[in-house]
Length: 190
Image (cartoon, rainbow, N blue to C red; front, side, top):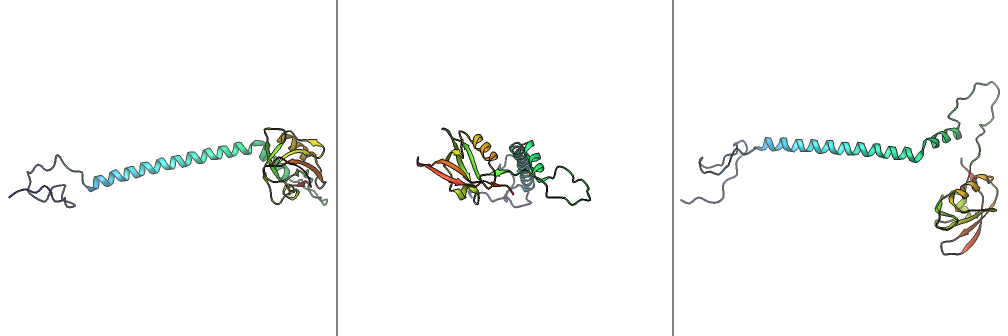
């Protein structure tokens, strides 16, 4: 009788031996059984899990460091100073008035330096004084009242000097190239 080329698959718990007779030379050595494969898979799963956890922890720490750099050390103390949380209230029997926090004037826009003189509007806060005046993303502010604006820093200084509630004339270069005069009423941060 002739031998077929196909051999039966080993049965679980068979120890890797074929179903037929012994000395047919079908194996080169002991075949690692299913428990050895399971151990290898578990080890690989644990190693990949530890690696993924390390990556997540390190990226989380990196994002936290970037956030702290963006906020800056002075930014947090400035917020505490505005809210009055930095100093403890002094005990007093006399009635107290509202805490005097300096009013910070805002225009409600985010600007960046333009290639040419002016401050490029990159975002407009809605609702806000800038949106009420008609500013849109892409406008370039050239003048704030009587103050010429050559950069975003110039605009920030001019807005900080303005009094909240007073109308201010804005000179704007629109995205299409036209110029326009707008009237804005700077507000305060509440």
